[in-house]
Image (cartoon, rainbow, N blue to C red; front, side, top):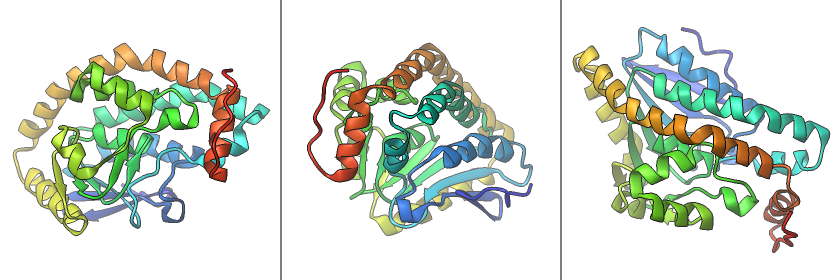
Length: 267
């Protein structure tokens, strides 16, 4: 399998393990439209790669992923192109997370730094997650005037219960990697320099185990996750699409980029 066509996602094979790196370090691995599109496709390619028995997902530089690209949000806000973009969001979001859950190989998130917004959701949809103790972790959609629609409302309640999930999502709360581990959001919290080695250790172990036993065990658990995704995602991402066209989203994104207090209007 050739991965040379990918610009914002780098794939490096190390034996039976594919290391997938979110590759926009100058932008804290924030995901704009083209990067999002690559993340939709990469999982299908990996799923068909017979040389790959486990996958490690990490970020280039000191950040795992800052989530959505705020600069791109500001540029789109209130434009015809921005409205056209929002119409594509539901299908693109469903493709990404369906493709992630359909990957037969185990996916390990090596969260080398901050993971917020969509970045946090990618971690939570991975099979095993190892995070840096001092990393910032949380879903910050509402801070930029958006519904936490791209998977967050599906996965957080499963992990920490509906009441705590609603508080964290509505308030855009951020916790440390160590606290995320205490909350059972991730599997391990380690010093940053140990994160990738630990992920590789587990990935290499899984890659040497009986292939169908591992894959079908994952598939069985993912049936549960797919049911939750099918129950929640269409509504939540539709609400997120609507929120993208509000004044308050545009104002929140501009205020965030300009480092000032937003002036919300309620529409």
